[in-house]
Each structure stands twice: as structure tokens, then as C-alpha cells.
Image 1: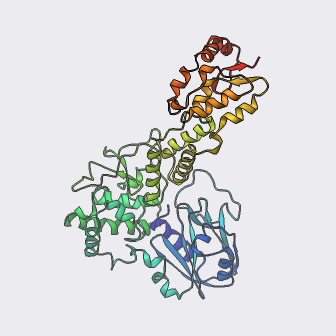
Image 2 (image 1 turned 90 degrees about the vertical axis):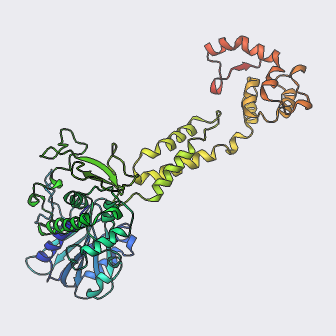
Image 3 (image 1 turned 135 degrees about the vertical axis):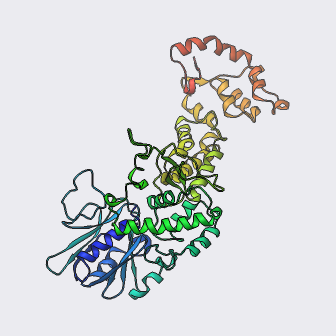
Amino acid sequence: MPEIGEVARIVSYIHKHLVGKTLAVVKAQHDENVFGKVGTTAAEFEKALMGKKILDAGQQGKYFWLIMSSPPHPVFHFGMAGWWKIRNEETAYYKPTKPEESIWPPKYWKFTLETAEKPKCEAAFVDLRRFARIRLLDCVAEDIRQTSPLVENGPDPVIDRDIVTEEWLAEKMASKKIPVKALLLDQANISGIGNWVGDEILYDAQIHPEQYSNTLTPEQIHQLHTSILHITSTAVSTLADSSQFPETWLFKHRWGKGKKDAPKNLPNGAKIEFVTVGGRTSAVIPSVQKKTGAVTGEAKKKGGKKKTADDAVDDDAEDGEEDAKNMEGKKPEPNKKKPTRARGKKAETAESETREDNDEDIANGATTIESKPTAPSKKNPIKSRSKKATDTRIETADDDDDDDDTNPAPLAQKKATTKKRAAPPSAAIPAAESSAPAPKKRKQAPKRQRELSEGEEVAKRWGLTGRRGRVIVSKN
């Protein structure tokens, strides 16, 4: 995800190529996630920008905006994979592994801009994963930071240094009992710090990311404040160009997790470990970042897939896991169809899937399992089988035992009156034994069972079996 340094990089390109110019062409294609989720449409965006002049651009943490010649003003957030491209200009903060295609507009574009002045400048906003957000704020330019969503975000550690003081940080840390890494990632506390910037700050401050924020000593808070200002200002001043980062930074060595032959240690030999804090993978150097206070019990060393959630794991995922565990104790009835059992297996394994699919899969699986015992097609299967076999065959008494063990008397009466085979007198079940268990009912029809058991082996050998392997006896 683009963080404070990457956003500063794009704002610098906007100042260089677009500020002071009039937009002659504005094209946008509607995306219900990018535009719609924040109450904007592509048509409204086009109308708000067409023919207007860009006077300035601003930033607060991960948000940035254009100041137009008149309201409304567009405000942007890149989300996980959004970016701003300028034609014939390399704006990426990393070197692509493959050469990018020279087509325009580029892939996954949400809007394009074209200036009226010569030389013409063309820009595009792209987003592969559709987590970006594009808003229109109908206010004067001076009130943009006092309007939602910016007003709900904390101060920017580079722009608002007069606010982010050591005393302010000490008060913020003491007010919460959460892992210090989770506190730094929360944009409501401080703007612009993402995953890699947060890890770099804590490594520089020699603080373990799992340690509770309210357990830090005054010395640790002093060092943490110094590290926040140093890391964020360096990321912004270099425009997130990692080639200009100091070689001692963790950033230079942290990206080999899960890759073969990737370094697992710093050049000085210190081991790199990975833990999950605030729902994010955190790189830690245990020999440097000591646990000097209470730590959260929720953070565990990672051994599986890398999570892609932007913020902390939400309560819905935890509820989904709990639902899946509760369903483990519910087993399908033995006479259920195989497709139903397959869906049950899907519900049992849904916990291991990614967070985005986890809730939906578990919910669907739970609904399927709960609905099995009350399926209306299972209430009276005897009638459907008798109709199916009226001419050539009937099923054994064992089939009837599986279908309805709770009321054997009516079942025996049906057998006695069938035209296909008259039940022997010994098979009739007295009314006094109507509540007897199923095994006793089978013992009261020994003649019929002996006839089936004598031919059972031959029937199986010749494939004369019905559904679920039950033996079928010819009427003749």
C-alpha cells in the first residue's frame, strides 16, 4: 500500500506537471467501489473538473487532493494498489520487473485528465484491486482538512510537527492498551504510517511491536518520537525512492519472507523474524527489539500465507471462525446424500481461506449444515421407493429401519397390507410394543431376514444391490 512517502511522490509530480494548468478533457468510467462507496459517480467527477484550473495540491498522510479554481475539490486515497500515472513520465517508486506497456489510457484506469496548455500533459488514476477511493468535497480549499474524512484522521508527522510533540505522543501512548505497532497503524491516531514505515520506526527505536503502548518508559517514548520524525521525513524527502534509503534500514532486507534463498538475517548477522500485529505482517529483529513490558497474547509468529488485509483483522472474521468451530460438533445424518456431505466438508475447511472469502464461505457452509435435518424430502422415503419398484422389486426390512425408527407400528401395518408380499404373522408388531427400539423389530421378522441373508453374498457379487448397497430381492 502506498504510504506517506509514496503519496508525497505523486503530489510532487502533480505540482510539476499539472498545477497552474486548465483541464480540457476529463474522462471517467464509473466504479461502484472507487466512486460509489464514497457517494460519488464518474459523471459527477467529470462535471466537477471539466474546464477548471488546478491551483494547488495537498497531502495529509495517505490522503491527497487537488485544489480547483472553484469547489468541489477531488480528494484521493490509493487504497492497496492505486496509483497516479503521467504519460511519458515514470512515476513508479519501484523498478518494475517487466517493462510496462505503452498503451494509453493504461490498464485499470478510473479517470484520465488532459490539459489545454501546450505541451499537453495527460494523467490517469489506476487501481487494479479497486480499494482506492475518489471523493468530491464541496467546501472552500482552506476547509478541506477540517472536512470528513480528513478531519477524522490524526496529524501528519511531517506537516504537523508542531502537533506531533513528545508530550503529545506520551499522552497518546498512555491512553490506550494496545500493541504499539497497532497504535501507529491506526490513522485516527497519526496519519501516513503504514506497515513498512511502522516496522522501520520501531526497529530504529528498538521497541518490540507487540509491546503494549501504555508500558513504554519515558526513555522509550523519547526515542520513539525521534524515530517517527526521522523515518517519515526521510521517506518524504526521498519521495519513497528506496535507492536513497540508508543501507542500515530494515527496508533493505525485509522483503525475502517466503522466498527461496532469500536472506533471513541482516548483514551484521541479526536474525529477521515475522509476527502478526494488528492484522499485519511485522518484521522484527529480536536481538535489537526486546520485550521490556507486557505484550499482547494475540500476536503469533506467522507460518502460513501472507495476509493482504489493509488494517486490523475485523470482528466478522473472528465470528466466522467461531461459527465454523461450533459446526464441527454437528454431523450429518447417515442417510444424507453425498453432495450434501461435500458441502459440509467445505464449511469445515473454510477457516483456512483468506479473510475476504472467509466470512462468506463459513456462512454458506453453516446454513447448509443446519438445514439438513429438516429437509422435507427425507420425511417419507418409503412411498417414493414403493412407487419406483412396483413391478419388479422391493427393498428389505433394514431399509425401513433407517427411515423411521420412532414409530414402527404404522410401518408394520403398511408392510402387512402391501400387494407385493404379505408379511408373515410373526412380523406384525403388537400395539403394546409401538415404542420398542428398532433392533427388536428386526428380531420379530426372522424368516424374512434369513431369506435375504442367504442370497446376500450372491446378490452383491452380481451387482443386485440398490441405493447405498442395500440388497434388492426380486418379486418373483
